[in-house]
Image 1 (cartoon, helix red, strand yellow):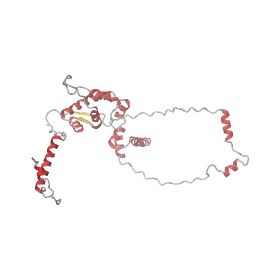
Image 2 (image 1 turned 90 degrees about the vertical axis):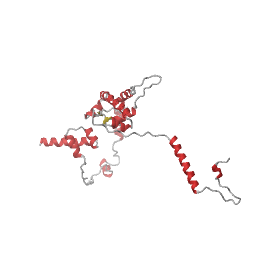
Image 3 (image 1 turned 180 degrees about the vertical axis):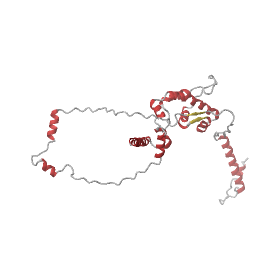
Length: 288
């Protein structure tokens, strides 16, 4: 017994021309059937992506959601001196991440899964204020799982504040480091020349006056120019920095240099220069 489609195959006559072809309606039906089978296969076998459900609006009643200020925001991260994984804090972060956050019995059917250290340091780097909703949006987590990370951050902060190096503590409190004198370590192991070697060197560098006097040699081969050409370059106009007035106002309010650098984007070196200029002007006014 032949398949129904086999009966529809083109039959070639002796002249070489097809005598039995599918009609446009039959081709359209065959195309629709193949497309339906392909869609059904994709629906059964394609990987399914998880979509986050829209967040329900919070009620105004009851206690306000917990918000934790991040004191390390701007001081820890990929673009900072300490990096995303500061050495002084990694023992604390890893230790708290390994706590039993799921309250599952450890046995045949139970396990204790730790939190992600990478996600914890991303929170330290990215969020100025840690809330449950902010962690949900940053890490794409559910509300219950995000609450675990908020609680872990709440436990991490006190221990990190106690473990801060002195340099980071000064930076966070806006204390300028005290300038230190340069220490020169002479590693040159060359021998000091003796008196005889110095005398021979002076003798070799003497002025040869066998044929001419020293004045004649100087006149013939001058060692320096008697006249100097002075070229006056036009004075460049000094354009005031667009954020200089804002920086001076912040300095007058007593803000730290690092805080001004984060808010305005002006380098700390430029801010210190403007601060010194402002202090000089104030001293001149007081002296007058």
